[in-house]
Amino acid sequence: MTTRYTLLSLLFAASACGAAKTDPVEPLDGVAITADEKADLPTSIRLLGSIAPGQTKTASYSNPPRYRAFKFGGAKGDVVSIDVRSTSGDDPVAWLLDDAGKTLAFNDDANGGLDSHIDATLPGNANPNVITYYIVFREYHQHRATFTVSLAKKRDLYACKVDADCVKVRAGCCPHLGWTAVAAGAEGDYAASLGCPANPICPKVLERLDVRVPQCGDAGKCELVAPDDIACGGRRLNPHGCPSGYECRGDALAWDGTGKCYQTCGGFAGLQCGRDGGTSAANACVDVPNDDCDPAAGGADCPGFCHRCGNVAFRCTYGTDWLNCRCNPAP
Image (cartoon, rainbow, N blue to C red; front, side, top):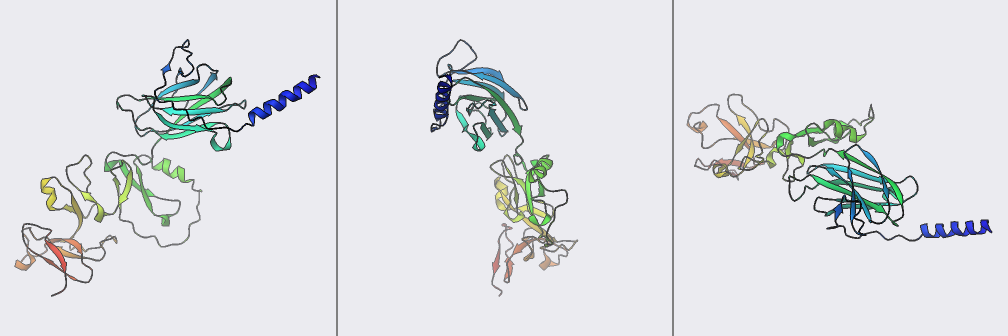
């Protein structure tokens, strides 16, 4: 008789555990977070304390209240990794909330298992001086359970504020794979993320010269930009500069607008266009129209700038607008 009841109990438990799950999508926005252990309202979130990056904490769960939480500090742009695990077969569900209680991320059953895992980039709170975020969790079936909660903070390999925050690095394990831009100081982390072998076997492919320069884009991420595509100067928080051998020119600079980077040429050094093998390879060297050196009036070794005209002639008008140079059919 005892064996029969035990078997029935096991079958009932197996049936309950094998029941179809529906994702717990209940909104947590605005749910009260309290450290008061007596506040056992069914929908409240009991705060268990703080957790720091690199820490793992053990937490007991029972209902009520329905949720438990740890808080942590983080800056805008921080990349965090959160794990809520069980060693006894319980099923954790996890949320990441900002200081206002807004849901930023949610996970149930990560990587084909019952544990929860969240990777997220912190967006910053409405009040930038507040750095508090919350890891909220519960057992899926609201059964008693014991969980371990882990927090790790990763560096955003591409985050930047100004161009000086970015550097140019190899994009892969082999030279022919090209280049990319990452945050200065993150070169080692980026290289480690590639998982390159100690002695990679690379095909013998001629590497193409890449003259792009690292720049902090408008989205706050490092990127590579060709000199011809740089909007240089201007009145902005992050005014872009031109690489060595280029000058920022443009009439809009006079009223805090942006200009373009032009490769310099001519002068006493006799610099040639396309000397860097980049996009300016087919350019012609044209004298700067509005400087005090005029090759048509006895000037020698006048500095110039490179302009692409293909197979047609280049003609400039010596006026106030130095950009009044156009590609025209040969006369």
